[in-house]
Image (cartoon, rainbow, N blue to C red; front, side):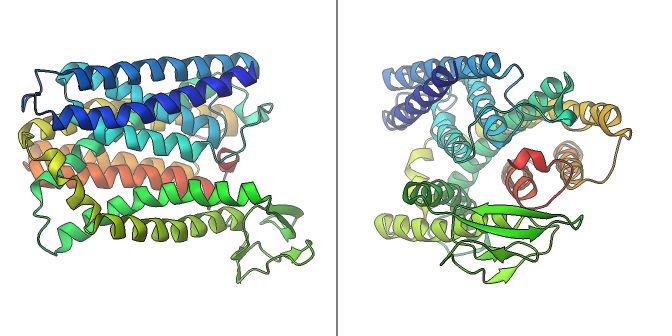
Length: 395
């Protein structure tokens, strides 16, 4: 059953990958209206491949649930693949509401990066730790993922708006920050590449280290240790000695992975710029030249309008109920809880500025992009680097 589950996830990934250029073909055919009430054969093929891929990924989720005996959302691999599936599902729903292939061209690469990112974490099925042995695991975690996935659609729409609205011929802060967003996506790809390379070479080294409770543990690295664990002692002969030792509150191994990912991302970004001979955002400009900005702005706003209350339920309400049951308190200022609150406060401010202050158009698009950056920081940095009660999520 576990093998079938893995195969279905791989099939879904391939179908998403094949579908992406068809979305580009749908845009270049120029047969879709600005309001996207028309369609064409490229768009039909792209959406059909996406739906079949989503069904395959749903099959992966169900078969892994059967094999594990619990909802497969208990670690980074499982949660992130579910997040990717929810993102594709949210896009499919939005597509049939607005009939826009352009959104697929920007959403599917993000979904592919999310799934590829997930695949770099351990895929083994393991028993739930006591803190996770609750039906609230299904309710809280899946609702959070679905809410974040819907909010991610607003990010894709926001990027489309900014690529269209910003003059790419000028060097200014708006272009700089838009390109930073593009680099961030490339850095995720860098994580996949560098993890794959070191995994293929079988690289590993071990350290004895002392955690924040004073207990000595063993930590195994799969990449050369630029950042070493607290009071670390290298056990591997001829292993790479860390450049700097991190305090116990920081997960040195996963911070090391983030640093390697950023380095690989810089190399990949430089290569892409060399090939394109222009900024990535500028290269995307031809795909958005015929879109209606008000139309894209509406999609971005409505995605937040739907995703925000779903995230509120999962990330705050359900989370506090489960925290009371598991730890006998509703709130404890755990890093994951703090960033969930920061995410909620940001989107609450987004709604306020949109409705009360008239922040439409480009301002709203920037808010949608920043909101997704906060979500990804919570998923990547908080899960991987900062030790807390939710540290099991980084395994």
